[in-house]
Amino acid sequence: MKFGIIKERKNPPDRRVVFSPDELARLKQLHQDISVKVESSDIRVFTDAQYKNMGIEVTNDLSGCDVLFGVKEVPVDYLIPNKSYFFFSHTLKKQPHNRKLLQAILEKNIDLYDHETIVNGQDHRLIGFGKYAGFVGAYNSIRAFGIKFELFKLPKAETLSGKEALIAHLKRVVLPPLKFVVTGTGKVGNGVKEVLDAIKIKEVSVENYLSKNYTQPVYTQIDVLDYNKRKDGEVLDFNDFFKNPQEYVSNFERFTRVSDIYITAHFHANGAPSILTREMLQSKDCKLKVVADISCDVDGSIACTLRSSTISEPLYGYLPIENKEVDVFHPAAIVVMAVDNLPCELPKDASEGFGEMFMENVIPAFFNGDKDGILQRAKMTEKGKLTQRFSYLQDYVDGK
Image (cartoon, rainbow, N blue to C red; front, side, top):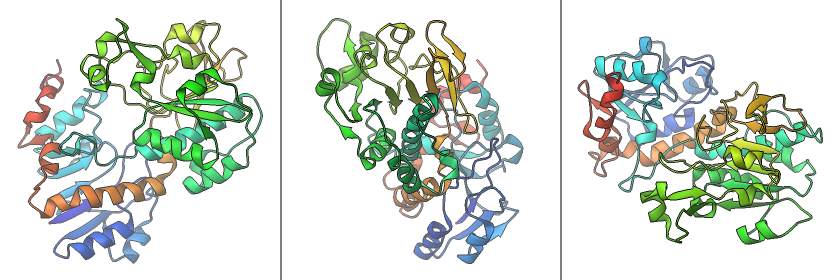
């Protein structure tokens, strides 16, 4: 079997990679009958020389490889026909801007495995960069507060070497007694939690968070039933929420009344109610000063996320009364951080962590006959057609 690591060609440039030099060396050691090539790249966080030093061939031609691994979408002109590809295609939600990409994949008879579709038998994702988005999102939320109120200056995360450097800079900052609310308890939420815990921000219960004042910064991490309630007032369980999201409405306003910083780390399913609404933001008792929207669904569950922001310009102001973007320093503005590719700011840490997950959860399937169905479930296209699991995308492919 011949594996290839492709060069990232999407703009803005992404320095991440699926496998670090160390992981590829380990892969070759474990499976000596495979060959691995890395496409030469001048932007990747690991240099060509670092791969060569580990005995990995670096080349400009991957046409002889069977399976190609990348991170972001591959430009249509660079897709090699009749190969298997792994990358984030961003087509699962029928994103209009990537329709041509999926059409080209089918036309070129490519077997596509989207990183997002790599799940276990319970449909839980096995790999991703979510934790690293959480790290940077937490850091950026505090950086945004410092900028808005001219209290302290933190360097951009992308200029630092990794998570430990983020934490070291945050520890030097003296914070007022802020209240942070974090929605979501998955990989992204746990990344946020890891940073807040590391800088000794105290975690408190929902009840205490809502009812007590503190002389130190505190946070609470909440799940869907903490910020949604059934319209009929019945109190049921998580399963009911996921089965009947239309029966629920957000009651997140109880948090907006006491919170300074809101960090979104949730997954927002289709049909679920909006979490932070325009009405909540316009309310006289809304205390929010910063919204760090890691989820970054524009026109989605967070009303102040008017657009994605960028690593180079991560912040913008939101004026609730007019529902429009304004300068961050406008006295009535809430600061919004809505960067949609946060893990790119920690390319080394994110790449190393991603490769470890891939080695543990996916690579064995190539050598054990896919006994757990990992590859079978993840395969989106085969022989020029959508697989049955992803047949719901047919109208999207057809342009309807």
